[in-house]
Image (cartoon, rainbow, N blue to C red; front, side, top):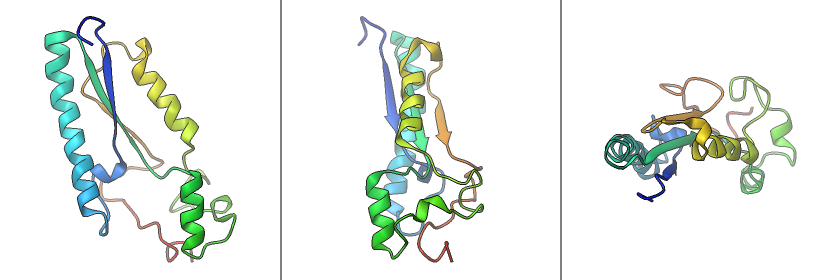
Length: 138
């Protein structure tokens, strides 16, 4: 990696910023990765020209997420009619949108950017990590 001046892309979570009541350990680990990204992004760029960045996705509509919400009692098409408070755009992120952000950070298009965190979410996350359980949708 030193020879090619490669780059590292960490995948975190919006929970790195504030977490949710039932995700303490998960949130702490994502926050730690964010700190690691900043520290290594600075030191490895200075010493070896290696970029280190991070993407913190918000709620992503994966097949597993569709099933999980159905297990919580939501309808088969719960994701087609989301309340604006949860999804101001009317939908949640797709895996393909996360992939596009990854491609950007891993390509030369992101230039000398290092030690940065890109949060992919529809609204500011500081102090606004609402629960995403079936009570929220009623």
